Amino acid sequence: MNHSQPRRDFLQQSLAAATLWSLLPDSLKADEHRTDSLSLSRFTVDITPPEGHSLCGGWITPVKDVTDELQALGLILQGAGKPIVVMAIDWTALSNGGHLLWRTKIAEAVGTTPERVAIHCVHQHNAPFACLEAQAIVEAQGDLPHIVRLDYFHDCIDRISRAAKESLTHLSPVSHVGKGEARVEKVASNRRIYRDENGVIKAMRGSSCKDPKLRAMTEGTIDPMLKTISFYNKDQCVAAIHYYATHPMSYYGDGLVTSDFVGIARKRLQQEQPDCHHIYFTGAAGNVSAGKYNDGSHPVRPILAQRIYEGMIGALKNTTKSPIESVSWRTVEMLPEVRSTFDKDELLKVISNKDGSVVSRNRPSYMLAWLNRVQRKQPIVLSSLGINDISTIHLPAESFIEYQLRAQKLAPKQFVATAAYGDGGPWYLPVKEEYPAMGYEVRVAFCEPTIDDIMTAGIKELLGV
Image (cartoon, rainbow, N blue to C red; front, side, top):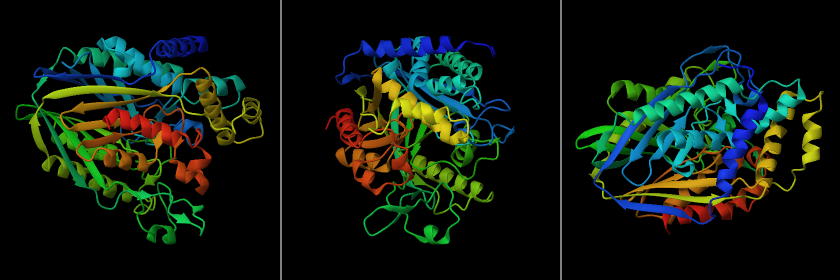
């Protein structure tokens, strides 16, 4: 890998990808095909970061060792217009120009367009957090740890693109699609549960929680169901995509790279079912974690992994399958309002304060990257894969669970599965009712409350309701 790749190269690539989007119309883009000739290819790529690489944006311990590898897992559907790519990666986030650049490179490799490529992070924290624009901002300071190493970043997408292209030579016919769900017990719990008499957040129940009072409180608003969409070549299941909404961390910050409990569960299932390609997507879990059931101790990780594994097995067991009759792909662009408190000069002042902590200087670099992105009018893309009465919803960043539940309510006759943590640019995406309640998630939300109406309108268009 080339450690001296100049910054201008990736900025030019990122801006070129953004220019591509500026040429596309703002209206809903949709196509639907009645098909009996669908095929699928699969790919897996190791994207584990090297020793010394930053984790979670550069403000926790960098890579010391690897507990288990991080992976990029994707599938490509052909036979319904240009190829459709869906991929999950074991990273904390992939944001802004970097997210667009990856989609563009994969699209070029497999002969499709970037809006037909959906990339989502699982959101483990002992993992990389990639934002090229934020990296350029902190690099200019000269004294801050890197956010993402450019050689590693580009090597990952180059290998992913090659693997995606190579997979096209190993196609599996797909005749049937399956849908199933199962309740996951004692994993998800709402983080924003402790409020005062006015509904304002008093304390957050994080990914782990040691406070017995907070852990004793109710689960709060969650989606307890793990949903699975599976693809069959007659009776053979060739791929299964699993969706569940919770922050996927048991413990982190020790420098030991891991796919954590959701990755452990998926890898176990993959080992047991090697002929089926298993992918896991984290749902709209911006305000959901395992905090009620996780005290952060090491023995809890395998317990949580077992519960997710049982959910996957249960969803597969409960699956009903049907012949594929129709396939659709829909996209909606949105350009949210940037948080009114963001000021470029003020952000730069905080970033350049040499006496500030790493987190107090790095986090504003993401804010400035988002502000610049909105000013150059690079939209966020929402997308949906529809097969028969199944609809997936691909949302950005740390969307709140209410968006996922809302999508299901809007389309009660459809089997709706939600993946969040797509383009990570805007960080947290609360619903508008939660802004007055304050708390951590609202404090680090990069959009105005109008994001709620924009996202909801986009979800409705994707679902056709």
